[in-house]
Picture 1 (cartoon, each protein chain N blue to C red):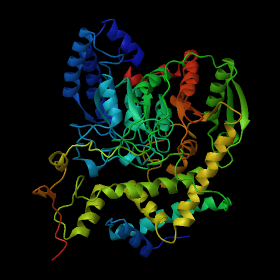
Picture 2: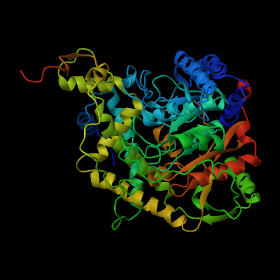
Picture 3: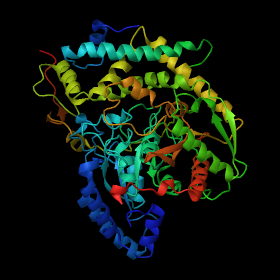
Picture 4: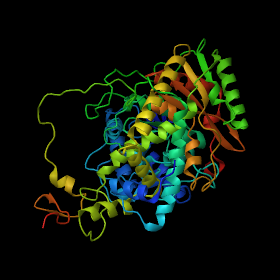
Length: 484
Length: 95
């Protein structure tokens, strides 16, 4: 049963093969058994989940239920959950219990999904390896000496090891797609503004976007049907109507035009990964798609532009952590300045401090134009590059990452090398586009993800292509042996 | 471009972050590396390009001027260390 997708679990509950309580017990047991080694959960909400499962069973018996009522899900610990602590992977919020639910959480609760727990993540979502978490690194279930990717590493690891059938993530520079690729699951970053950011702890507000991390594109579509949509509590939420994301999954992709950016297949890309992606593209061609070469000439500049914009916004957003109203407060402050300075010193970890310092620098007098405005101009150029390409193609395809999951500690003390590994993901956030990572093969038993990038609000098309691909491949069904 | 000790101390003060003396050299090196990475942006002439602050064209929404939130002071203050009479307590600012 633990190998089931959301669609299969829904059918099992509908046909009364299993009750929600039995289902939650099964997953909680797996979580408790494997969390010591994987460290993918910061909090496991066993009691609350079982209580909700019993309520879900009653609802199902009474006929008052939804498609996913009584099905478990893991929530990234960046989403505020009233009554359960929300740490964002930081000592700063180790004692924080949000007084309200994030919109995404509220929507999932209303749909009947049951939270198994809060998943581990890079501190304040800043990291590509899940090693910056105050709660320790998460392990990759395919090889526990390797990172699961980040920042949504706990969610990716939990779904890959089937400790949860699905999870949520957030993606500011690749934090859904890169861990999905490293762990062999499906992860969708929706268009900026499609999913509410209300109650999602802010990192870089013009880039952050929440989305589903699932086994299949079909499951991602089910989750999108719940979480997408306008929210008056988020000033950047779009009023554009949502699609029915499951409706187009079975459309034929015959005649689909796929753009392959030359810059995604150059010397930065590992040869073995290139081969896996080329095989994936051949499958799409067999389904009737046509591949053409395209140019995204400023791809390499997306890294410096991103690492100006994201830290700038982070330094501004994280100024709220002053030790006064919530979060860590230092002991016996001498005066108000000491309260601010030491609370922040003690509460933030190394990478967060590095980004706050970087962001403060680029926003400070004398450097603002040279770095921050320059980065915003590069952002415009990158966004225009995508717009030009989408005049001629339906989607863009390429690798999600330059290589497979790297070793724990391999890049931890070399921030630049860690930043460069985000080459194929950050430009999508700068432009605000939707993109999905789909399991497409293995190199030495380590998963590789193919990235499909869509035009604005084309999530349905991305999930349609991914679903058609998953109907003719079985990479997404592979489970690491130790968790079988 | 390199970032020196006084610059690091200035930035830390601007962002109200206490840093240990022994970490300053590290910050100098790391921030210098990061700034050098940023310098790559200068390879492109951006004279006539408009800065893009936000990916989607948005406008500020207005709402009816009506109370929609309830007072939850006690609930919110559960997350802080010290309060008195409904106020947040901090070290004395004025003598």
